[in-house]
Length: 149
Length: 167
Image (cartoon, rainbow over the protein chains, first blue to last red):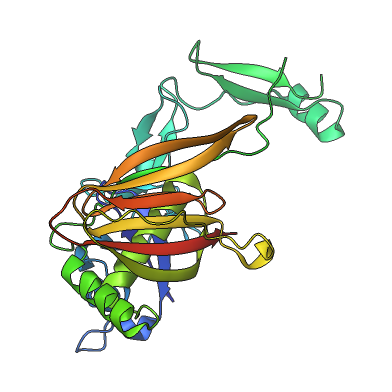
């Protein structure tokens, strides 16, 4: 089963469809994206070049089953196709966040959240606290919060 | 103090912005409308109609998170100077099988105006006018009564209607 993202004029993903692998075989019997695109143009009334193959098992630039990742992320409705970087980007979570191509994800301008201390981890495990870092867009900081407090 | 919106009467309108060289074939649609009106037959399915319908469903879903399901579709022809009778696409005694939304598409239109009636709480009988231009759509709740008028003296206006329910 192959998956193709249908793009709108602004490169936004407006639909994701599945395609039987036999419908994207070329004359040599090899799976070929352009054959799938042509099939979808014929049967779904949308130009071939606006169908882009996407991988169900690719998330964050890696393949869940250890295979070869394809185009950063499995496309979802509302994602944006970046032709230059060949990545499907989810919606930007915060205005200040920036693209990180290697992980096909958005990162804060100061990097990932700090790791919890061993004590905080043990308190989370004991269910006495629920420590986590939450992004504070106004101050562009990671704020430590306890949702059980 | 907090606010909770219990319901809303939203109108959606704009151009049907298809990809380059993939425009809706409005000649085909107007021909089908003419044929279905003259022969008093159901509006025929066509690739062109499907392109319009899919565009609406895809983009309303993408932009507003509303999943539309087709109910019915037909075409209307308005003579020069004609003003339609008040139109309502819900059956008040069969709301279960009535559509949620009515979408009008300007197939071949010139000075085609749509007046949509609505109530604003106790301020009853208000209306909002919009000119339906070529390749433009307007979609509104089917519980709103509306009137279509052809405000010129020279040509017929062809309007495609598709009704939807949402899930």
